Length: 177
Image (cartoon, rainbow, N blue to C red; front, side, top):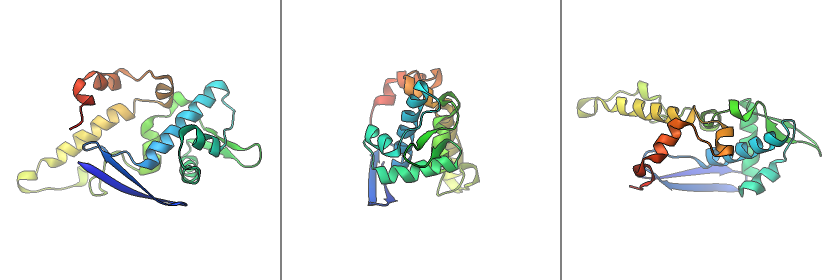
């Protein structure tokens, strides 16, 4: 399945097309997670160190204006703190080991899995599709299995938890369908 989303930002509309089956990672989540991992790297050197938004944008080759909006959302969600001024910038609000990828996804895009903007357990199907709801709930559980147990420090250090590593060791995980 090919998914296409349009992301509105200060520079117009960014269109992301992802061909990856059922999972769609928005540009907002992709850019935000990349910036958070950069902040996790800065934390490793000095937990009080502030990093400018434009430096984060350059480090990950993402649009600076779009990233500023993302960082604002992450600040409102309590994942980053910011300071204005010439010496200002952003830093994580808590240790990278305590922030999961799921935290970032939820802060930027809402629930991990939604069906027509509803929670999977709230959809209702009839007839032959009556049990489709269970598939969507299972999908959400699988996403939680990886995203809630993978911290920014795990991504930064390249040491994913065993549950995520197990998925990666399955050759079918790498096969595009």
